[in-house]
Length: 190
Image 1 (tube, rainbow, N blue to C red):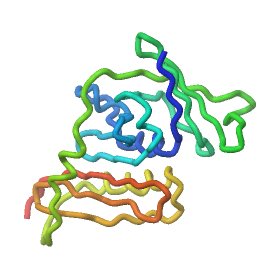
Image 2 (tube, helix red, strand yellow):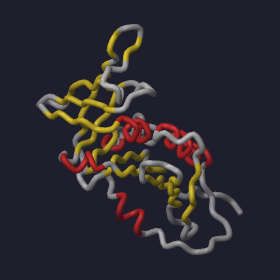
Image 3 (cartoon, rainbow, N blue to C red):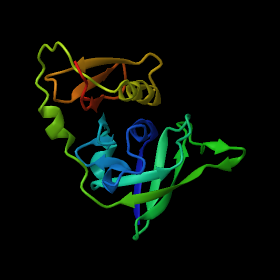
């Protein structure tokens, strides 16, 4: 059995970015990266949150069925040998997050596959002045949701753009977590 204990906020933020029913099955989950990150992407936008606790685990992609309760501080993920399991949550004060007196437990599925190399995409962004770029504003809105999930009451991003056909990096500021989002450019007329 694979047992992981991680901060809940980075996982919750990453869940906004994971694909829901993509044929690229490895995008339908959150990646625990042993380089010290929690990551997710739907193929159009991505998030990477620095998480030192992730360094103690092997590369794992998990899909959590349901939503993480807001007051959660820690997530305990238990995966059996066939790749299925459950997770539960804990507050910082030591009690489990409860809903109507019942501890909330969610199903978890481990997804086999190779998660995309976000380092490669991020390193291809060479900041330069840019006149026009197209992007889907719904993906930009995910940055605000993710920052709130990470504990920010006033989300702010610094946009780093390099070329019309390259990803935009949105650096999250005013957070206790180091994180950024990548948004792929969209084609447009004009």
